[in-house]
Image (tube, rainbow, N blue to C red; front, side, top):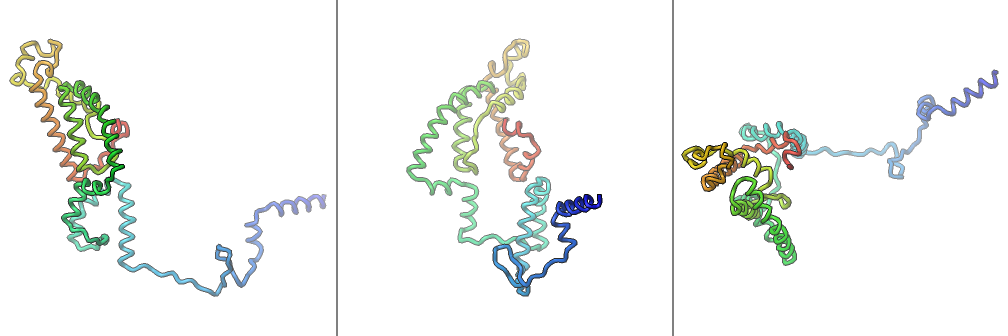
Length: 263
């Protein structure tokens, strides 16, 4: 039994982890240590690590703070709103890269990206753009006409809503992949929102026919007045979007679900 017990103790000592054995056994001292790259470095040799300057430290800390705040929309909006007061307090701001571009020219290039990408165009890119434009146009024309019918508008208004926004966005747009123009959801919302909104003064024929009991929509009886109301609705929505852009309210999209934003 004694021999068997010693064999078991010997077997357990062989199975225990190396870290436990290293803790009990004294560490062997060597005059040189490896730095991990295969070369041995003497223990007496020291490595000097230089510290950043105060301005560089402030710049790097602000970069990290901006990246952290970018992931939190509410804090980002609060930072934008308080940016003016921070400048008034005289706090150091992160230095921007200097360039030779005139401030007015820089503002124009930022607001009108057309002047930036038009200089990079060549014959190959123009040919590809023409092919893409023809392909998309063949699809967009009947699509916009159907969207206009869904909204209760004439076909010509649907074609206008597909062509004019695309032309304007080519000069002022910031994204090359964003598609602009009417969609089915907007058309349904316009028709549902403007249904029965014409007053008796605007469309007396519809009210003379019995209104909703006639079974006909207002855009069928008074198409011109309905188009004017739809244009007014589009103008109000455009003003709201411009005001939201000025107030930096784009972070509100972060609180909307993906099906709402993507359709």
